[in-house]
Length: 529
Image (cartoon, rainbow, N blue to C red; front, top):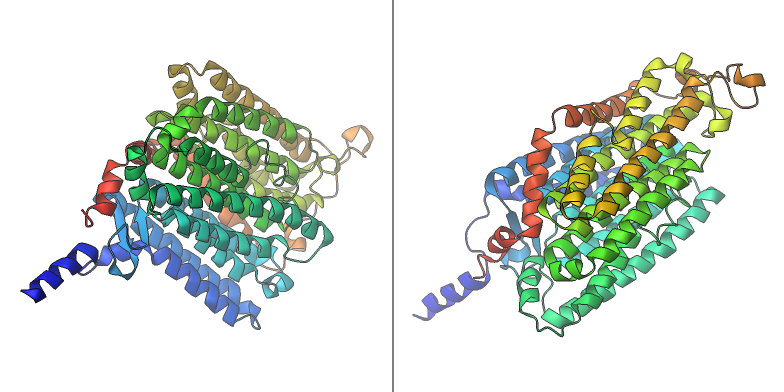
């Protein structure tokens, strides 16, 4: 009898059944990136092997994330709890559609950046740890997307930040150290606020499991300080996402590292902050988000407009793109402010689009810098004759980032504008449309100056062609390592724009799971119940 009671008690607290083989996909991205990073560190004295090692593991990362997304869409939320302890007692990894799609898109971008880095990162950069830091960065990014524990979201943010510092100062140039200092101070401040908010939330409800938080928050009395906690999370993750007015660290730092590092930063880092806002404000603290909806909407509009106006004021292409990253964050915040299912779906769609497009824009800018010898549009001109293909690819990305059809940026803006109008946020809809128009002017100006104009400003009447450096003269490796990543990302931009049905379905499922997390809660806490 005692043996039966013991077995019953263990069954209520621990997983006793074998874990299905497919469920191991939940932690496979972390295993792949950590193993790849470790092997790259082990070959630090033979850096010529690091690109091949990283490429193998980044390919494996894409593969396991494809399998994970397929598993989640077919089976629903997938949960794995460490040490076999049932949630909320054990540390859980909980993957829903939102987590899976963002993790997959992030891995595709990392694969492209790893391949591009074969040429863009020299042997010194490899010795300083480009590939180990890249794989460690992906450990933090994937861990942030896949965790079901809010404290471990903080832990994965720390992993992400440590690796991003290493990438930011790759080369030890003065401008990099200056940018890294600003980046570090603001991000450490944001992390501290995140930890304070999490401590207050834990003291209030006594749990760190996200599903358990979503349940217990609804049982709190009316006087509970959820508004203050929501505001702290908004400030902390707003800093990480580069929302106004705590976004000045981004344009001060993103133009300082190598272009391949700027590309992965622009694609991924701010989107992790957006994801954290979605998870905390929309899923865990919906009443707090609803109470602050007007404030979030104002922040969104100001972020959009200040970002795009900052881009218009720049002559350095890298700085202009940094401001466009900020402007895109405003569009994503607009969906969160509105808070309906379609608006949240628009935010998710925009996040996927922005990850792909901003990474591709930076990678193309790297080729512009190689061919024109500068990133300053005043010193560029005539690059269309040097590479019509590059001019065409950049033009496609210009249309996409502006939200013009038939490319990926068109659909999320349509969703967000429609959602704004339905919920009487007319001024938000106007801001989204105005931002799209100003973005078109900003990137169109860059394209005309760099590609269409006959020569740099210093040429008489801009009629003399600037010096165009053939890519073959500026490379130490194969051109394919530069063109393949750009071609893949631009292809995704076109495919998503022309055939958006699959993305509509995925982001729709993700939005439903965030707004109504009952299926998520049931799957995570079902064993404990």
